[in-house]
Amino acid sequence: MAHPTFSTAQAAAGWKTQPREQLAYWVPEVDIKGRLPPDLVGTFFRNGPGNDSVGSTKLTHPIDGDGLIVALSFPGNGHVHFNSRFVQSQHRVEEQAARKMIYRGQMGTDPNSFSANLAALVKNKIGWEKSSTVLTFRNPSNTNVYMWEGKVLSAHETSKSLATTHCVRTFHIPGLNYAHDLLLSKHFYIVQITPFVQISSTDILKFFLGVSSPGDAMRYYDHLPCRLVIIARTPQIADQVLGGRQWIQADIPEPCHIFHFGNVQELVEGGRVVGLDLTAVCLGKKFTMAFENKIWLSNASKAPGLFTEFKVRFADAIADTNKSPLVHQTVLHPASVEFPAVHPYRHGMDTRYTYMMASSDPKRPHYFTAVLKHDLQGKGTRFWQSEGVTGEPCFIPRGGYAVAGQKDLRVEDDGFVVVQVFHPQKLTTDFAVLDAQTMELLATIALKHHVPFGFHGTFTPEVFVQGHAPPNLIKAKI
Image (cartoon, rainbow, N blue to C red):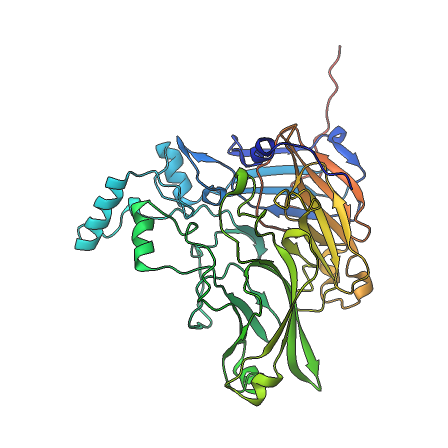
């Protein structure tokens, strides 16, 4: 397999700022290579940091950047509409008006001096100034974008939702220190207690003084537990499966940090849930949030993400409420991977296939240049090798909402994969459309500009562009 050849500096250009606040146009037919499937109909949304600086302040880490939503619309007639716009968060609007960075970032970007930070802390402590922009972390709303009840919502992992209708239930889990992702099955919520997060009062003081950041504090602490927390969704399941407990904790044999889960399925015997099988991308003991070579968000060359399976069995925990369930942990593939994606309508069900952005070069595990399709039944793994740097793949089922709830594994991978590809040597971005079964390239949407690297996205079988086709072009008379 041939690997792309580009320098570290060229690859790092994928984080450069998108200078336009909004960009919207029909992609010219000449820039669509191959053939778009007529049954690929809907909108692909993707979110991620769209700037590497705010005003004159250079960002320390991409996670501090403002969210840039990208929407690719597929009407199903061979045309594609591109639209990108920065999320109009309160903090971005204020900073754009002021033409400077006002609020500090979670990953260490701080526009304030040490003396300004110290003065704000003192005023806050003695009650002179309880609310200060100097001590406020910015909400860039750059983590995810998804459709929910007819609305397109963006999110940021450390900021509260802007709108909440009501709280259904609250769980107080001792030791739960950080959860970027979670799994949801028919009867359970699953999160991880990570051994990579420990924040002391001294750390907090350093954060607000600007001499450290929450990201800097993220590393392996060998005295902390590494566990799965399995929470019953109803009191009935707590009684039937967890021995009357609202939740149980299961120790993970080999300590790791989990940013992203794949999927989970419940094992049922005699009408009773007896265990869980779940997958995740696991980062080993050497993991930190160091912005390695200005390319990847963490030190993937030292702690690559490994696709891992966990088998949790409840038998011991049910027989003795003082015991934790047994967990078997198995690495499924040696490639460095991240951002696992499965069939969107099979969450919590048995899934065979997982799609991930991957490094196909063991010598450069932090260069994600491929998409890996993993078969949980062990009947072959497929790589699609790009010519640039790939992002999170998005699986799109053929037929859209009509296939929701289907359990036939023979059609689980009947659909398409859309993935963003940055070309470091040309400073342009493509969106590749793959056949999800064969992993063959069907079409390439070649843009004339670059789109900054993204985080997460989703697909909806709805098209929001009016007209569903570009306006007719009138040829000029010569």
